[in-house]
Image: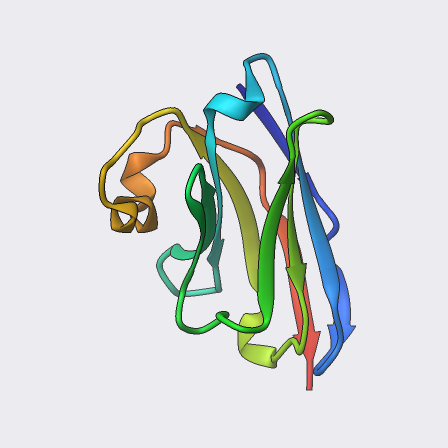
Amino acid sequence: VQLQASGGGLVQAGGSLRLSCAASGHTFSNFVMAWFRQAPGKEREFVAAITWSGGYYSDSVKGRYTIFRDNVNQQVYLQMNSLKPEDTAVYYCAATERRYYSGNNYYNDDKYDFWGQGTQVTVSS
């Protein structure tokens, strides 16, 4: 599957952004979709995933971010509210067809087989 992320930009602290990731090439509904991010000088970290059983979020974004998907149009979104300067990073969408009994597996980037290019999110203070 090919993934194309968009929607990043510059926003003030407290503001909102919505990221989009368009998928093509495979049956989108078969995939678990996720967002990861990587800040300068830091490792890539899990942000959110949406599986057949629901959404998973990192503690740092829980309550502020929402992941949702549109299987008809083959898109996954990340609505980001109450943004903080520490949310500044390159955000990546990812996909996997692997199925795990424990949703905790989807927190790990090595469980994803397909990655989009990143989209930069910058939050100014």
